[in-house]
Picture 1 (cartoon, one colour):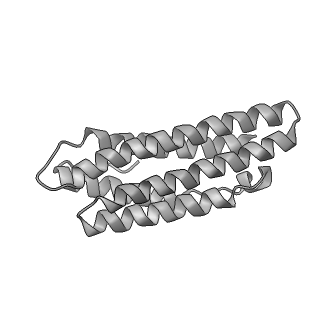
Picture 2 (cartoon, one colour):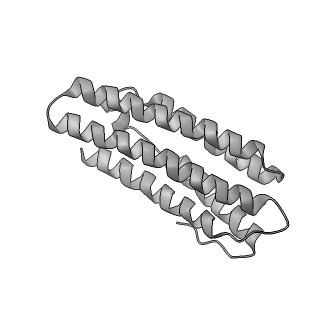
Length: 152
């Protein structure tokens, strides 16, 4: 269960980093608007993911491993949905670096989501690439707003 908590903490950190996008002021370029929209997309998607992780914990704590495995799959589905929503955000971006980074971030969320099939797979969840791509988006959004970004 400690690894589950660690995974939730790491993904929560990603949410907090994404929240930094919402403070980006509007500019002549569309990147700040995409950053604001993406922050909301990530916040909403990871909130849904966290809700499923709560169900995983509750089921595992009660000894119902079948329900825990089912909730892990549902949590993975939330990451896949988040990936689809990030692709929608990327499609609206004019800047090539935003499109590319959001596309890569979506690919990684989808890959990690599809890998979640049971409790064992949850223990192996690796968000290293998601963290790196999140830092990249923070930098892009900070540069677009004229505000230096501070990586998580």
